[in-house]
Length: 382
Image (cartoon, rainbow, N blue to C red; front, side, top):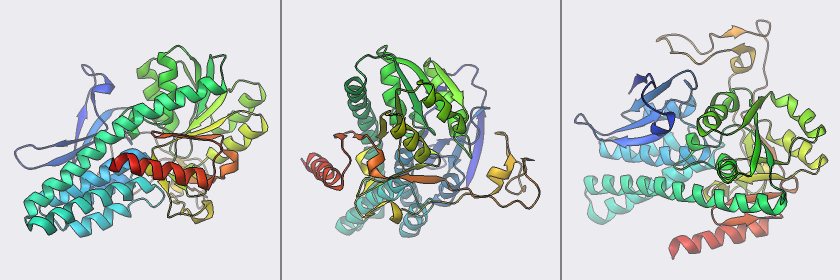
């Protein structure tokens, strides 16, 4: 089950509220999430006491973003184990909560494997639960470290591609600390450029249909003091035509073995625009987002969202118990069908480079990605 606690924010900077944390109050361990569906109107924390509550939080996008979903999935397994629920059932439900984001399944598998290994060795469910929790905490730490390294590699790449500095970067969806154990993926690179005086302007796509750019990236840019401008997704073309974009930086929810990139819907049109206007199109994602078991872009399952997210406009608000999904202001005739994919897929030949914590892949080929993944495994084992 889940409970919600609102914070006024009057005496607390938004950066003081982590996107996710494990707590152990007297009544038992809980996983606390910053409810991203309520931003930027208010900062509200969602407290999950079991895996079903976390599954619902994942599906409703209260917690979202590829790296953070992996962390949440791992903690969800640990939560089930520590509280004595069926760990196998919890792992299965969590891994399938959102089909496109591969990090979610990776995080679940890591914590579940740690649990099973410890249980098989000691036969003690308590020790096994502790092993699952340690695996989740380790993944959380690793993601924070990966975020810092991606920012470093990404900034170096920008300096190589755009030696004049004064970068004008266009980004899509939300890729900051709200999706990471650290400062994010693509947003972390922009933040590094800002801190070193290299960022002139961050162009923020509003990102349909749920406005993660307008609600979340603008929120993070404002609190970081980054010079930013919000634009509708379909205004990006005019920016390119005016020569106002020096590079595109996006994240990824899954990268196939051939280098095809699944990211928030609207990413592929940006890649087409960038290619036509000779602007670098750069993807920033941890190695865990690369899925060697998905051979190509056509094999990526693309999540379809409810039509009311397109046919209605709903402002972030306190949900009322018992109300149905939707309930916003209609912007289309009653009965209108909506095509509402959560993601689209960009083919590898449209991607200038993929930046990971273990280095940069450019040009993007299946061979280069396989080599990177093998190198990252060697580093992890070593």
